[in-house]
Length: 405
Image 1 (cartoon, helix red, strand yellow):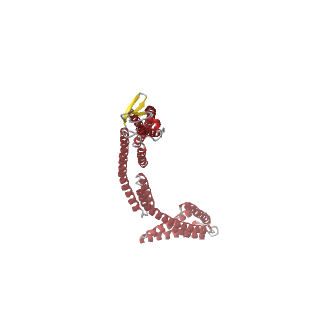
Image 2 (cartoon, one colour):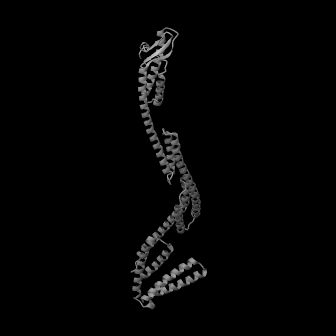
Image 3 (cartoon, rainbow, N blue to C red):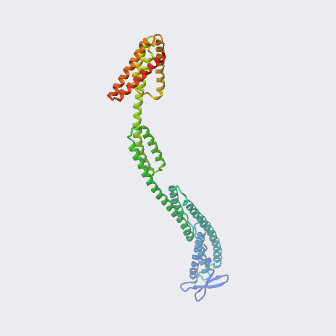
């Protein structure tokens, strides 16, 4: 900063106390001084000039700052320049005017740059909000992903708030479009879940029916038809649709529990039956070993008697596992075929009327017939069935023996 002496040379005070400042266009009266000496008067007005210089320096400093309000600085410079021609100061007014003009030009350039930046920022901000509007409108038309879409709308609202620089009119216009898309999404989501709730009520009612049916069947011992019905219920369950996850899980546990009661009971029953069939198999295998050990060739008659006893025990034992049934029957028939062949050979050695075995077989048939009649008279179905089987077996042997003769 120049000292006041340098600036006082641009002024003078005449005899009546009028103060003048010297400019390139001539002298201009800037005030009056009556309070002291001429030097004191010039110094007083020079300090006012110094105040202007300081103010201009401060504006110039702010103008070069990136954070400066350049429009405000430009206005201040214009105001100072406009008031300089009538300012009550003593100093190099022409130099200060030149500096103010240069600073004003620079400020105007900065203002244009600032406007360009602001316009670019505004354009970017508008583009960002338009992108959010477009995304909102696209999301609002989706038919699924309600949870993710709802979360995205919440995120977009926060993004919208963080975008600045859009003029109020444009911002309001874009917000109305964004809000409309969000409202459309909210309505569609509400309608979807209302419909879903209605559908789930129907599904819940259907599944309650299926659970009740499964629970009613759970204690049935009609294994085959009940198992088929429960499998059909399972198919209906899958076709009925799904409830909300928690409700679906609870309903499924009840439905499955009822099925487990039946299938566990069936499994236990089948295990018991399998054990019984295996016991029958072991008993019949023991009879087969006994039958296969008969010495048929040495004494066919005794072997035949023993075989009949074995046959009687065989029928009393009951069924065996299906996969072993044919094999066991073949083994029994093999013994029967050997016995028949040995008997045929023995019968051919004596006349029919003298064949004691044939006579014995006829006697046994007659006794079996009598036994059957008694069983029928007593009305015992089991004894009747057993007597019929016994008679049929004896008649079969007799017919074979008579046919062979």
